[in-house]
Image (cartoon, rainbow, N blue to C red; front, side):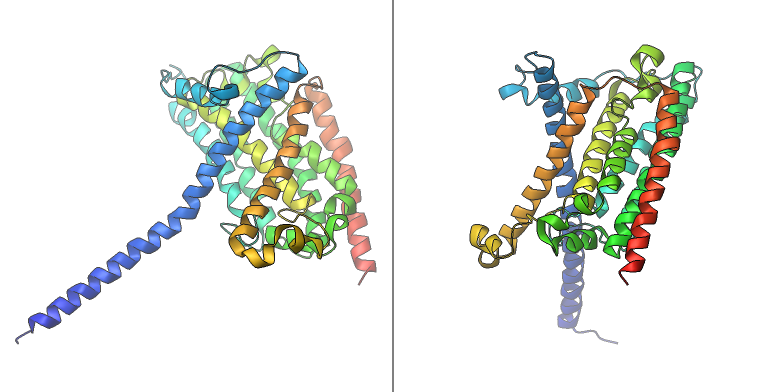
Amino acid sequence: MIIDTTEVQAINSFFRLESLKEVYDIIWMLVPILTLVLGITIGVLVIVWLEREISAGIQQRIGPEYAGPLGILQALADGTKLLFKENLLPSRGDTRLFSIGPSIAVTSILLSYLVIPFGYRLVLADVSIGVFLWIAISSIAPVGLLMSGYGSNNKYSFLGGLRAAAQSISYEIPLTLCVLSISLLSNSSSTVDIVEAQSKYGFWGWNLWRQPIGFIVFLISSLAECERLPFDLPEAEEELVAGYQTEYSGIKFGLFYVASYLNLLVSSLFVTVLYLGGWNLSLPHIALPFFFEINKAGRVFGTIIGIFITLAKTYLFLFIAITTRWTLPRLRMDQLLNLGWKFLLPISLGNLLLTTSSQLLSL
């Protein structure tokens, strides 16, 4: 059987084009993921710098000023220092649990960013159970902290891990009930649908006004989930040295440091999405095209404006969280658990009951 050389060349060129198309598709699939990772990294660096500047202002100190203009590169310098430090392992601890713990904590929080809409149709995974997927994924992080505490073979680390697990369980239930109330109001669990449901009524359509009790409970529960003062019992310096982080050094300690700020950023983004209208500016529908010409400038300009609005609302909540840290004293462990089980849980249940009743009456 004789095969013409032109046919062979055509087949080879076809397969070459197919392989190039596959590579092109893979690159375009990775571009949004890498862009999101870059944005998250820059966001964390900005949060660290903001926290140091705000805390310095509250305590009447100067704050970072030498590393870069206005000390903006101080967080980058600290991260570089941790990267080159020696990575120590406890001699009698479980090295596998010790090494896996920080990775689980960071990975579970990073996956939560998949369902966050930063603008109109600007979300990596618009799934129908978006908010509950976030709760399910974020609940894995305390498992990593518990593994770290147990693998360190240190009583302070183990106590810190146990406290992190107890605190997470106590405050995830009120948080979930508040999210369920929002889902009932919006008739959807998708983050994009929740934002669009708020945009129908403008500024007064924000769930902040429709769910004020749920907003306060969600705010407190978010601070407790992020282990921020006054809820930083798992790493209380006066009691547990540094909690589950006591035996860590180098890049693994840096992972815990990054995880805490990633968790704070994702909680602030979800406050924006669930209660503050997301990417919508919430001006009257007539004034919006007049001021920004979104209808004429096209999708790109509208997307940029949406990202800017989302981040502005997010950093407003971050300012509240940072100010709270340097204003309120730390709670005791029994006070923390009492607040979660005896106050926030009944309040969030009552809020859910009221929301369900109002939805049933409106049918």
